[in-house]
Length: 632
Image (cartoon, rainbow, N blue to C red):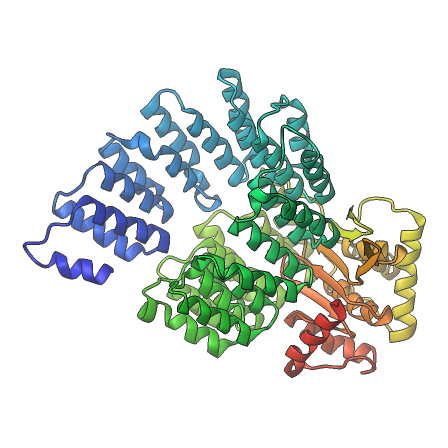
């Protein structure tokens, strides 16, 4: 498309109209193509084709590329008609370019004199998105005094959800007046409960609405609650939601709700039902984004052939692939296949790779420990984003590569604004090396961020209730007893020795027993103990439907938790599924399905004297089939 345009511009008789140039600039903005976008803007200026529409598209292009100064320069030079893109300009502000947020708001204020309601809403959302909740709430209070509007309440709740501000959000919700006909506020509150890891409150509110008359759940409500159940792997509550949706005729033809149900079923191990549901859905007219959902499910569950089979079906139906489809295929993590797919995106389909696609390649190299290759790949991208460097920093932590991690962290500090997660990754690496002074210095920088990050928490569903567990609470005696029993069992049966090398807190003055006790207070282990105390047999309509322990955590598992879960899964002869911030771990038969698990098993193998390890990396697909059978 770009080549054809530039070939036509060489002809003296060719004069492109406004719509063509705007379409090309929007395509450059979506694809992140800085080179082509700047070339088009240069051509427009040289031929004096600039008008309001083209100027607005050029400003949004520069804003997406992270160059907000260029965007504002264009708007200041041609201010006429700029009020049409103020909300779009605010949406382009991300954490990486948050320094220009106040300048953009000041400029919009100079254009309008008074902010419109949509602009006020976007300002609140923008500050929440970049982690500056104090400013978001200050603007919210000022705007509400001037002219109350439901959309401002929704934006403030969303800002609290983005910042995981649990207590601040709860206070805000209590102060919001009960606007009965407005289901959008109820949806925002449900989303807030899910974002702050209180899934049971979200589920209770959903069913409370379903029993009402005025505020019945709408399509957005169903999508939000299904996403929460998918995140927490809440099988019983999710099936109750699905049962409610199937009773409502207004949701019957919704493709988005059907896909959310498919994702939920796949996350809870009901893969055959997910495939069957999609086969019925495939008869409708689906877009590439819809097909990417089932392709991603197949890739994540190691059904390689099925992934490409769905891809072929999509092509046969006349649907062209997009970046989401390629990102789903690249989850296969096979280097040779992944690079072949990646290298055909532009020559064969004319689709420039976006961040989600590039991230898959970085993940592939990182999981293999090829940090140099990942750095070379990122540097080959014309405008590498913060997401790619941050992803690579995570893999440096996993591979205990401090030298590369420090270099990457410096790149992030120089070119972007460091997020809480960036600081946490480098801090954990310093703590692993017992470099406590540097770890404390990073922790001090974390405190300076206007962030309300949640403490480590885990959620698990037992007997139809989603329980939220954290290490800082005093738990009842049966939980403590189950923790002690699990620890003694794997010590006696498998010669378990606690791995204290990766302790994240400065416990240099503590004894080894105190350090081990600290490790066994992690939220994942407490959630597991809760399942061991209450037999993890799900009963619905007098039928046993599940015997798998499922735990979701808002942190990444430490090495000791990972090794403990491998041994406990063998000891209790049950599958344990843990979804953390890094990946999905499936513990069964004394092994883990993740690649980190393969590396950890080498250590475990020495501890347990090769008694229970029954597979190696060449048997991963067979292991995956055994996992699926155990879920049945």
